[in-house]
Image (cartoon, rainbow, N blue to C red; front, side, top):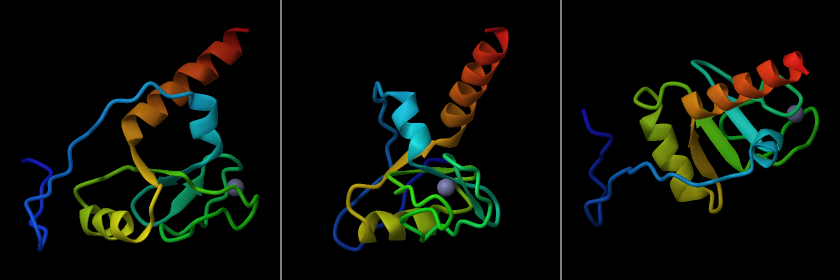
Length: 109
Ligand SMILES: [Zn+2]
């Protein structure tokens, strides 16, 4: 099933882009969004709502949002894309995979 929707003005579709990014920067500014609530990737605060632009605990600005179940939250994503310029949606699996690799590497020394 393709990730697409019918916009009012033209045929817009969500297409995943690949960027070569610095993960340390991403990790400082990502809102990880699960089924019901979000987590700040910087301080791991648990009560973050998807509409929050910064963390209520550490104050970091959310420049990236990693949604676990994109299909379930597609309407929210599209709304946020329209309302907030400069916020990027990143792939949740990519985020968790790289985070896991970093953790494993730090444990190995
Ligand atoms: Zn935080």
